[in-house]
Amino acid sequence: MPVQQSTDALLREFEEHHPRALARAISLAEAGSAGPLIRQVYERTGRAMTIGLTGPPGVGKSTLSSALVRKARSLGKTVGVISVDPSSPFSHGALLGDRIRLAEHFLDPDVFIRSMASHGHLGGLSGASADAVLLMDAFGLDIVFIETVGVGQSEIEIARLAQTTLVALQPGSGDSIQVLKAGIMEIADIFVVNKADHPMAGQLRREIRSMMEMLDFSGWVPELVATQALDGTGINELWGAIEAHVAYLNESGEIEERRREAFVQQVHQLVLGRLERRLARSISQVALCAGIDPYAAAEGVLRQFGAGEESDDAALPVGRPRAAVKGLA
Ligand SMILES: Nc1nc2c(ncn2[C@@H]2O[C@H](COP(=O)(O)OP(=O)(O)O)[C@@H](O)[C@H]2O)c(=O)[nH]1
Ligand SMILES: [Mg+2]
Image 1 (cartoon, rainbow, N blue to C red):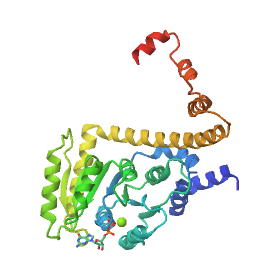
Image 2 (tube, protein in one colour):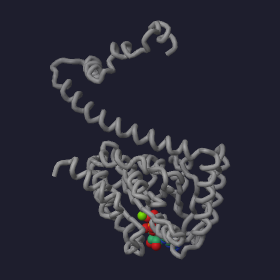
Image 3 (cartoon, helix red, strand yellow):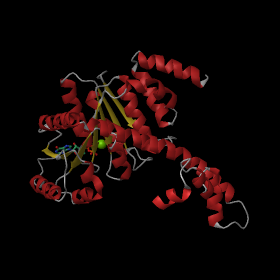
Image 4 (cartoon, rainbow, N blue to C red):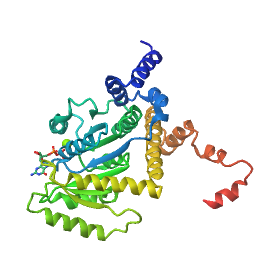
């Protein structure tokens, strides 16, 4: 089937709200081919509440997701859940755990659960996840949860897709402080101390508070909520904190900033992904030239991209003396 025709058919089903159309659309996103569809549905995005959930494996993120989905459903909201595991593309252990934890929602037609992998998206897994968020949003889901498995750089990127980011930490695990040091502190809108039934829960709360004292917050100061995801203790408080954050974003106008950041990140990844592919081709061609030195090779490659030394000059604003512009640098 020609690509155009299949996109049209998919778009029609998507607009008619067939869950299988959303499922197919997200599979396209994983393969890096959802572009044409996203261009068609993009104007319908920007309505969903997006909530990122990150933290070390085993802290209870999927159990928390499940409890939050239950809460959202009790409020009559339709929900999407995206589980992402950037750290282990070949092991589906964490994703299997996610499916078990979320099992109670599988039969609910208003809950759409999806695990993400990246087969060929230009922007890698976070690019595919960004597409999935847009697709769920355009599909009309009220709330989209994005769960990532770890606390590395790609998790931080993925968390940035969300308007509200929850960082879940586990009492009695020495890695909490490591997590806080790894740049996670800065992305948290809400800290969740899960497994509050654990004897070390109070100590972890104190540790988070004292780490927070070392940072300067302008605007929103992260909330700290204790939960027991298994029996639902603290979930209402957590929901209240999420709503307070969303209200803050709307009242302060920061919501626009967050949207812009997510947009910039997505464009950056798409452009970078495409450039990297072309770059790899150009470099391997240049590398075949016998006797070329690395600087000459780099210059040759950059020239192919219109970014050689001469073309840099050529790109200076017209009508401005070159010397003056150079002096500014
Ligand atoms: N004691 C206790 N165990 C919990 C709690 N929340 C989750 N768990 C358990 O922690 C384990 C890991 O949970 P999971 O949601 O898969 O964590 P994830 O890897 O962060 O998604 C499971 O065995 C859960 O049953 C809690 O509040 N208290
Ligand atoms: Mg999980």
